[in-house]
Image 1 (cartoon, rainbow, N blue to C red):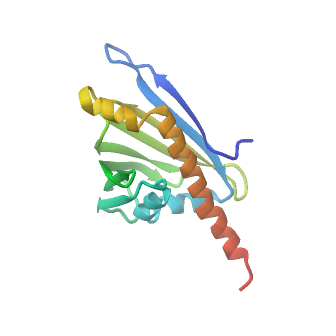
Image 2: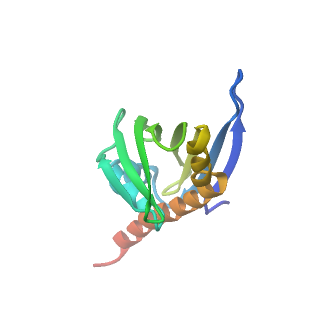
Length: 180
């Protein structure tokens, strides 16, 4: 049983002359109901996104998002190492109790589609599954994106996200169980 985040990277084959697009996948288990996991990610999306950012990567919002909904846009800047700005705009779709999709409409890579799924695996036990299909741009922009968003970087990011999600949801449940 995998209690930590696992990340795998592969290449999805596309038809025609286009090169294969990288795909990153991650899965971890959190001891919380699927509704609690959904609420954490979707009820105050800007707050959740800030909580999921790793140390040394503060996030500022140009277009914050409270409750996530189909078509909602989140525009933010990640500050890598607290000093390198990476601007990103994502549009959300397929928002529901089992997860959502965010699609980058402006940012450091050519394309990025991130599917988040919440799979109930028992009482107060949910698998969080992430799948990202992305494509690097050419030229210097592509080189910079490869340095920031490579397989190792994504593995580290999703290990942090697993830790942060568990910390937020599992501790919250324990705090509520403590006597006053």
